[in-house]
Length: 633
Image 1 (tube, rainbow, N blue to C red):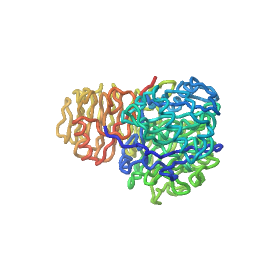
Image 2 (image 1 turned 120 degrees about the vertical axis):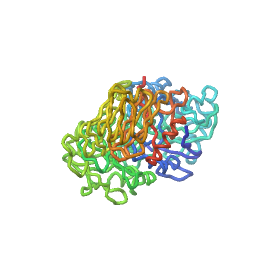
Image 3 (image 1 turned 30 degrees about the vertical axis):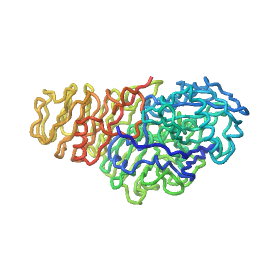
Image 4 (image 1 turned 180 degrees about the vertical axis):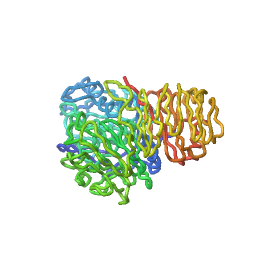
């Protein structure tokens, strides 16, 4: 499987500052401060995927059990005050609640990822440094921090197999944290908390990414979780975003805010409903339910994304709640206020207080949200207006936003909403995972001009129907099969077929877990396709793949199988479907249960390459299948 090179060059340092209520973070690249890591910027060609469904994976996206390494250090003038066992418990124990914390670091990432990432850290130490802490706090820039790093690695090498922390077996460790006794020191100097990279090689791997931070007198979650965001996921610091992401302001040190929903959707941690210009529908949304995305079709690296965010749990410090709207533009490199930001909060009150300031204070206000009583519409004529960054009209209209609350409704579109066209209720669906964490799933119907029904899925399977889909017959799942119908397609007992302008017979088994047949302009009788332009789909290790025919299909498209199905689409532009079912979690990397995938490619079988080739010929675009969310212990 191909991987994008996310390695950080030696000398790159990312530091997090610690002024009250602010995270004065900076990235130092070749001696200069920059707003984001240049080598971790979303690749230019990644924007092609925005028109498709599901996660885009602009950034590294670990899944499963991800192992980190923690090295404990103290000094002759600053001895340790926290035991190794206490630090281990703070990092790894589910339900950890000492020192005012509402969970461990492991809890934080389990919750934010909806059980996709189980971040566990192995703790070693304490190591007593050769020099007093006052020595390492001095020097020029981070030179003495580099000295301590090399010293600790050499001293602890005999007791650690560093290769165990190369989660994806790419020859590089992914997350090493050096935690030192005492306070932080002086900003931009010595041991000031920062993330950096190294070329040191041990046990056959390069000790690539690491961070340093202070232990103080008690554990706090912000810095460790923030720096882990840099190390594991490559996220930049979000200047000008206020308190709406852990990668932004340092609003709450002990129990920090969550991760913004744009990053979560990109990782595949949160489902997304794609809206388009033909969508006219009303939706119901709740916290941690699917987000909604509207892509600039003329320049697909830009989009709006919104969701319901309420001041509860990790967001309890927010000054309000409602629909929180983001504007992402991949053509912009990072966030450098007061210039236009790569990722910005569209403030409901019509101001640019957040995006005009590096460290906005206050970093949150009730007027930042959309809701009845503040601002219940976002369109071409409102303030703020729904224009793209180049001042052209987006065509997006969000209106009739309800009063703020845990269940909110809003409408989308510029035309008449057909009675009964609700686009499906927002739901996290699926089964509950470990420690009560939610596993996202279920089906989302993104509306469409003629949507009457929506989709239904079971057991945590996720189906997304892009806005503008015509679903006149509704969608159903029977026996674990997912079917989307727009003209009479049916599924019975796990057997499936799809027809365009023809008829379907359920007496024959078109698909018995091995093959999916699609017809365009013909009929299916007894499981045999006649008069159609394409029949495709084959079992690969229990997976069923279906591809659309070579002629426009207006009768709906179906992808169904025992495991994973690749996206399929009608050439008539009405329906795009991506289905994930229960037996596969994507391309395999041996028997390893934990992995960090830099960039997903093909499945590695000749057949699949053939399918991808056909899809490319039809759509001129491809996307990797979505991961199954694991239920973790």
